Image 1 (cartoon, one colour):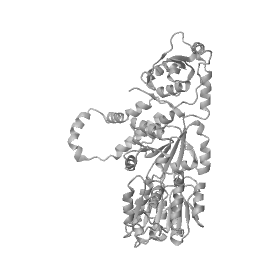
Image 2 (cartoon, rainbow, N blue to C red):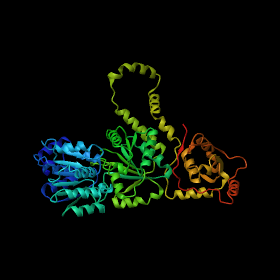
Image 3 (cartoon, rainbow, N blue to C red):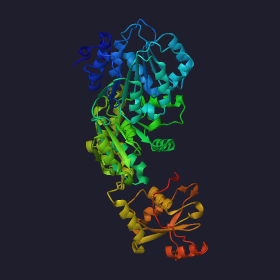
Image 4 (tube, helix red, strand yellow):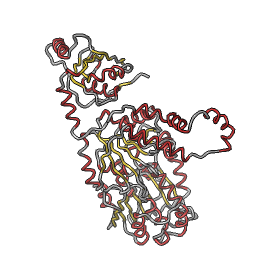
Length: 573
């Protein structure tokens, strides 16, 4: 079936053909005839990126009276970005319909300019609920001739707390109107809106209700919490051409991860609620132009983002709600293209995976965190592919070639290739040399903890660190310090004793040099760290007895290793 056969106006057919669309997508095939041929309300459930804007936009634009300058269609959506995207798409579709005007109204910019735009006349208004409510309260918009209301990304609007605004707006438009509700999922709140404001709505489901898109591959890896960032770097390094969003739970975590990535030389930036609208627009513009490869964002900040061609979504943490995971993963695999959703999870989150599989009706594939050798191989092949495709401008480089040939004539073909690869590739080879395995196999954590607690000291070296309880150090911080600075989780740690001004800990003796070198420069909350082999006569048992005496008989040795707390450990460059 073609767009012409489906029945939309010829001017629209011409525009969408020029945009490269020949055949309607599944949601368009099902929704467009219903809107064109009836006055029935519509509830359409389809994943983000499946063509919903054209599904409601093309038939509604076909029914617009462009000779009437009053608003006839109102489309509501959750965010400024999505508002602008919908308005832009509708404008592109309708460019051959003379006299048809579309106005976008949203927060974060001058309301006076938007009021002036509305006064000039517009048949279609695309709005965020907050700004539309503001215009209604000021009596600056006339909705008396609205015959169609579209609620796009309804579940996200309700998640963002727009229920009261939606109710107020729907009470202002004529009762004899058509309401169309588009959503990726159908939680209770969306069903309640449909029940309250729609009559005999036709429900259209593309795929399975609340299910994930079939074009998205869902993957997960399992790591220790302290290794989450290192796992993220490996995932990113394994996909050199990645263009994606990294989702974090909090603003502070978003800023922290983005800053670490940028400091480590990655093409990334952050999107969170602390940014001004101008800063947000700047970051989004860079991301859309692919000036940056990765956007680190909170769920709230990323709601309503409409960016094409994302290859990956990375869940730095699993969200608490299934609907949020659906929206995250739906940012990739859009418009029939394939995409990958990767979740970096802690072992305690393993139980969430079967639940996600059951609700989304999609299989999640366990993918181990790539090792150093795999990453280096992937990066090398990517580099060779780039060299194969590079365009050579003979005219521009010709004058330099004679000098280059002279300098390189002593090298054989094999030597030149080796040097070229090394010059471009040594950074990865150095970083991933002897890289530890970050993966946590099933049941490994408990076995490791038990081994740490029961190990005898005969194969261990005893180390002394110049941090103690007066610095706020506990055993959890100590194990986190060791993991952070050695970057080697295969080092077995034995007993530990946290004293007032210093601490003792056992570690596998074969890693003595690694331990001493790792702590040569660094600090713990502003204090310089020093680690050395324990002094003659130092034993954990003796220090524990001494410490108990200092504390009036209280237990002083802190030997339990649990979940690491978030502390700042820094290497001095």
